[in-house]
Amino acid sequence: SVPCAHAAPAPEVEYMYNVTARRHYSFPDNDALGYGYGICEKVGGGENYAQVMADVKGDVTPNDEFAANYLVSYAVNLLCPAQIWQLRKSAAG
Image 1 (tube, rainbow, N blue to C red):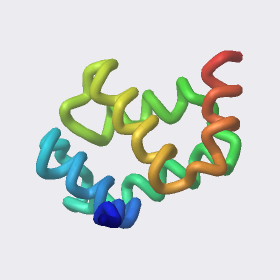
Image 2: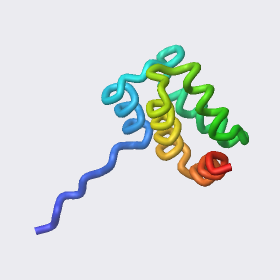
Image 3: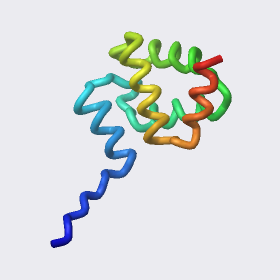
Image 4: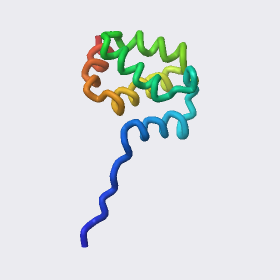
């Protein structure tokens, strides 16, 4: 028999579920998806990891180091994976 294929949810759906249902972040204007894309814009615009982390800690709760790092990494991995290298490079420097 042929195994059933399980489609992965769209990246936006997976992101929204993880940051609102599983982890319960609070976002400015309750716009989790817009905020995630904002993180992508910052990374794409050349802001370094430390700057993005500082912004997240000022905007979002929970805002401890682990929560902020998870959110930044998760947003980039799901919403703008082409920018992962840029984020890693800025975090290493």
